[in-house]
Image (cartoon, rainbow over all chains, first blue to last red; front, top):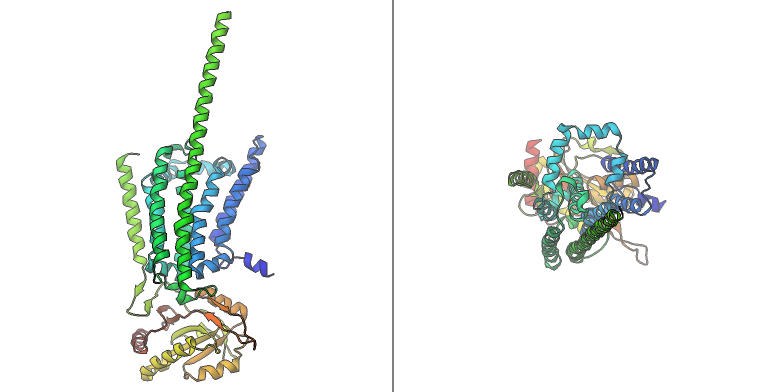
Length: 293
Length: 199
């Protein structure tokens, strides 16, 4: 009974339930549609996709949300998951073909109409611009941590939801741009080399901000003292832990991203090499065929 | 990506950023914050110190100060309630239109008679509120505050950590101000007077 109460939403959000249910439904439907065409998605990709959905859901719609509202370092952990880890899992599961197959025909045709796809495409290309995406990514972290803004986000339910959704949506956009293979990115594809520049460029300001929060000797975020902490912990320790979470694991995600990008580069090289070898073999085969004739 | 498109996108980002800048905390001097439109309007269902069921509607027309605490509280609660009593005293006759709602976060020990005895120490404007677990949980979710029980000592006595905020609502139940520990009675009285004039 007690466990169940920890798993239930602290503050039920119909939006969150609808969004997560829709994503899960589209994915399962997509797997079924693909299976009809004898395409098996396998086990690993759905596992990573649902793990990504689950961690994001857990930090938004369980008792964890209460702890995040009343403990600065848990709030930072919540954003580490919503803005970094959860989106990374979702992107690494390469869910687009499955989700695409899961969208019913009429809905897809509506989405393809120029008056829908035009503005959406424009917005997408703007948000996926290699200069704009990192500015938004770091900007959001800084914005919600301005003490006076942080105060209003923690005291106002609507702003709190806006804050968390902005982190999740931006996390998916940013890590998609960084981690998705180039051939999957379509019109807004980004080359692999510049991705390293962006990954480094977003790591540095996160390190600076995290270090500032962890090493400042006065409390920066008064709201937790005013509204009460989730359990007894010294305000400075709470702030230091929160700063460390912003500083180290968040910035480490750039290193993880770098490894994923390296994997894409090597895979591309391997394919190019295979094509060259294949072309040579073909040429040799047709040459020898010609000789026989 | 052409330059014009990038400029447009950058302009959009900046505009969005500026729009969001409207939502900073509005600090009114020391220890007082304007929370109009941020904190949820007054709404609850509880039992008062006389055992009567009450809700926000019971206090419509009065300026309400909402505070969470418990009667065994050694320092924070008596200090805060005494400051509020002091501020109400400074309002003179106008003080009759101010109510302090003291919500106990320790309903197990704070029965209605205990609450009644406790709030009567501070004056007739003080109301003690006690709710079921569900009613109290609804309220702490609504006002985004928390409390938790410390380990009991050998005699079974325990302390409760709780929020220190005083939420101040206008006569129509809209949240107006948030007072923190240390807000001087004179400053509180001046703000209450303003609120009373507006309602």
